[in-house]
Length: 506
Image (tube, rainbow, N blue to C red; front, side, top):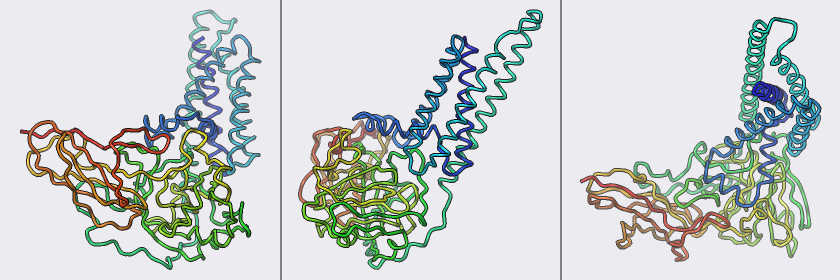
């Protein structure tokens, strides 16, 4: 039985490995592992997103990839054991897994259906061909002396399994490297024009120059990424189009060059993920460049009664927010095409994405956007709303301690306690620090870029020996102070004070 399980596992691994190789070599062929992983994401129950992010953070996609692979191999092992009793049932099992992978693959708009079928046929056919050979190699032949027969069978099976394992692992690795390389490869795109309205130079005092504090502008390669894509989509600028339709008088579409020809503006905006825990890192500030969403909606002519803007990604992922959020002259929502002076990176939504100040990303920040639809707020729920997240999601007033680190040992005397605070579209008016259960002490604030961005803060603490607890709270531009009442991120953002424990040496 163990040899039968190993046979089934290797047969499945060989099929998966060759299908990964095909995905890496042929543009439009799916990775079956990624396709099934995406299907799992699309069918996740309420609460699953936060549970996974809490456990694995930014590594959630890697963990899901590995989990799908391990489960596939375990199923293969089980089918190998089943094949000892019924080759027919084992074959049906492999075919059923292939059908599941095919259905999952066809849900990706970047996958060619013909190549999806070929990939599944290759994977299933390879597994069904390899399994009987492996089972025969694991079984003794009857026409030789028992000792010689067993020795030969062991050598034959060992040699065959090592060879097939090498082919499975090698083809899988090569295929994945090619696939990810193609996803990250630079494509020829028109340069993003300079904006007609540039962001004002950063004010003096915008950076408090404290070692270890978050930079006021988050570099692109350090900016958080939370989305449902297991592999970064590579959309072609030449074939991309943006449709604007729904409850509008003049629906239209435009291509990438037409979008770039519109008046472009720049602005610094802090965005955050609703999954961000108190003190978490799923928040960042960048300089975004793009066309005003308001200009696109004015061109389309929004009809009376249209109360929701829905953004759709290339694969149908959706996010929706009130049209009133765009109508407010104090906010400038963008269809962004550049980030920190560079063409929008694929990881962050190339060719274009929505940036809406003041709203959590799951209701607004559609990456790889291909459609903007106007509808009624009550008529449509974005992707995450049916999964238990709030339909309206303004970013909460929050603050974080960056320096010192949790449980850090410190020398007595003057110690900088510093971090960042944000309340996008309301600004930060005050940040206060509490040591143990003492009074609240007002911190120094950096010069704000705008109400749409975070600020740095600094409190110089006269540290005394012993164990201490440091807490921080912020008050936004409306006078509202973040609450001490603790809540989980679901359904509309985490609440509570960020606190850390430190030890001051004597």
